Length: 259
Image (cartoon, rainbow, N blue to C red):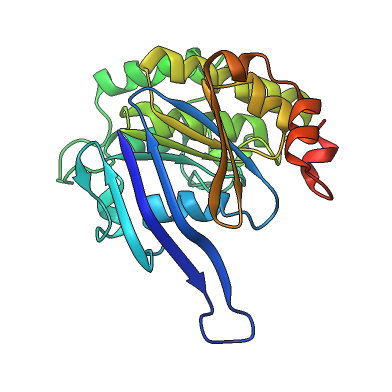
């Protein structure tokens, strides 16, 4: 489903602030993989997602999704293939628009726009049904401005928007880090349900080692812009946080606070 081959990315090249964020990254995901990604600050986790999404181009290497070469494709043309949820709940929605209007924008992602009716009755029925699956009562507030929602409600809505049109790849960039623990657990539960229901190929960056172990079928650890650990199957199921700390000598990082 996804192939990253020989990716390199350096920021501020030729200056005193030069930083090689991605250093010959190779990674392949199979269809339906749910991969959690951990690593220290500056390991290249979010940069990897940004390269896939086209936020900036790689200096070298190949990005292929579902057999299609995305490497030189601009960010807006990748929208039809990707769903993404950011750490900041404010980034994935339009605050001054209603819930149903935000969903309508997501429903039309990657499609041509015309002068037809904004939201059809059939679409409104679909939005209501999907909102009801969140268990947050948002199906009864479809005309409410998104800016009035709590952070957790907004992040759940963003997750729904990212998956409304089934993406080839779902990118989750620490999408619960800004939420309180109870709300984060709710959003993670919704994430697991949606990914399993739709069979989505997913990459989830997290600093929480428990979450990295609990969710998904595969765990990778990045360091200095490369994959240094790749664990799946029974080995992943039997992992503990202490195993990771001892085996990979992790020190002085936010992940320690998530034990």
